[in-house]
Image (tube, rainbow, N blue to C red):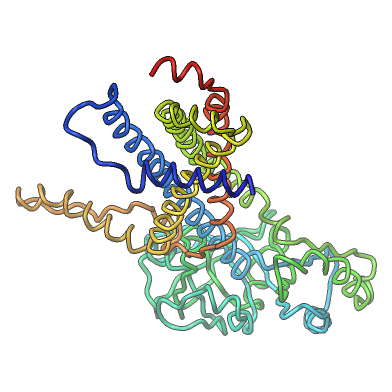
Length: 451
């Protein structure tokens, strides 16, 4: 009952001060009480908006960072790293092994791939690339199809056909139907050799770091032109749940591959690595960057919570006479403490609701907002050039596609946003404890003597 009474009193105090304040009079009244009421109102309103505005960039950073990391991670998993990779130094019957792996519950696909470095030459232009020898069914995998977009032509690696990444094709200036050479070195005393291919398609994963290096050919052609000493030969495995069961399947996959290996291959152990092992440095860098951004944004929330404590401190000074009257009527020190702590919590809750709502709305439309800002910035930059008759500069990009995704995946996690709001409210409760403690220690006689 006492808790409910304290909550009601806190709500009345915050409501009368910030939500529906009394009008300020033309002059001072009761030794400046009218003026102080206005200052109190502005202080509480400022505290509410301060919490709200501090949460907006925090939620934006949270959603954008998680979206970028999730988008880049998914593209690596589905189009490059696979969920798991199995490799062995010994000879093996790849079709038999792939068929064996597909029978394991939880695995949806297994594909042999050969990788190696090459120099792609078209006319007088050359660029280094990663040659990826894949079989015909690789492009039909649901994960690949979901993230690998056909920019031009079609995905075909049969015969002497090659499929290039969008950025690599742009660098070389090639189009579908053009011919190019893949120059690979055999190692040792053997001179590098050039192999002629025709471009059948241009693809994009939506991330230039991947698009600038890919050249897809058939497994047979890769085995023919890539040096045995320097190429990677492995089986890429796709599971039903890469973030869950992939790690649990590792020992079962290694055991199954070892069991079906025959002849000389029996003496070579299989090594199975997950995507976390293969791209550990990249994903740890993403996680560290995200954590640092959230820490910086979190400091603004802490500052806003301290501002709530200052607002509650002003509120206790203004309400000192009311506190004295309440204590004279029997209100206990814990009751007064609870009232003003809850007043800080209500202020923080109001600000958190405002900030979470606005932050979620902006995060939901973040791609449109970035596009609009880029257009406005482009107009500002191009205007002097157009007025002077010069060539307009290149359209600016707020997020350079060379380092970021072309489109940010937006996935609003209600639980994460709720956790942010709850944390901000708790910080406001904590910041309100000290001024509330001062209010609870007010002596009625001293207040009445001064007034």
